[in-house]
Image 1 (cartoon, rainbow, N blue to C red):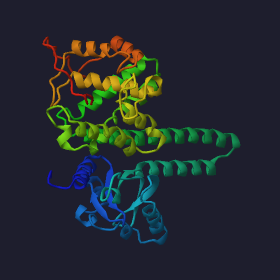
Image 2: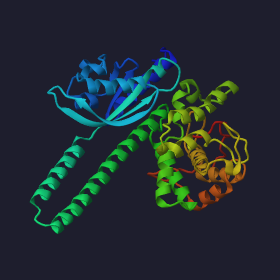
Image 3: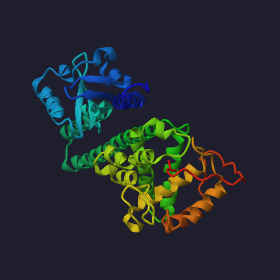
Image 4: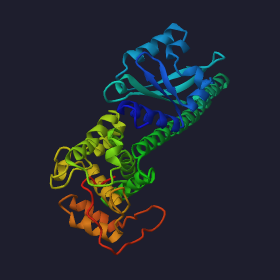
Length: 378
């Protein structure tokens, strides 16, 4: 696979990611051809995958109004979109879905493809239809306005509950996709998955210590999961290099902050994640990258993740270093107070006593640690 051109390797990585998703997913080119479909989508469409791959998505929608909607989406290929639509089934029925389309960033052939994820909402639609039918029956059978008003109130509450349930299901599906995308960006690391979960945990705890509300702390923690998503664009030879990076490699590595910001959707849901992805390597004294921001010009979320990321990198082994002891890492972070890190975040860190591992205590090593590589961080 390493003999493939970089763009083809990235497409292959994206295909593996789509296969891991628990929702329907497809890789589509500008003409509407299905380049790849995951097993979940084949099951949703009740067709063998070999029948779908290579087919044009327009061929599955014989009705002119439906084809017009699909064609309009293809005409806006370079724009992200999220909409309710349906998948046509072999027996003529329609499976209601929420479809989310995102173009791939980068040069062709990457930019000639888009990822479309599809979530089956047939159960929610059936529940809504059932609730509407029950409501209609109540209206027809009501003998008095008071009775109608009471039933309407009950129906409204039921509908609100169903909407909340549906919203939570969709939110959880998005969270699962976010986590798998983050894991894909860390796929060359033996610690895959555990690193992003530790960063989520550490960031959430530091945010709470700094006075953020429970909901805000949770949101910052979820956003931190995607801090290094831009590393998808960094060559394996740099990510897995056992020694220090040269100037060219370091410059290429540092571009992952800008790539991460570009990858993430402009949807307001990802505002925090974009700020973290771009600025989580900025230093408090202005010596960081990519923009050389300093002090309060650095978003607070990025300042928190910066410390959490460095702490986790120091206390876990990498291809270029062994793990530091917890005490050595704490001393180094305290020494960098006001230099790399916001003093307020350092103070919250020292008060929080973060674990190095979410499942077990760290093994302390009394030997003096080696100096970290310049790009130390997740």
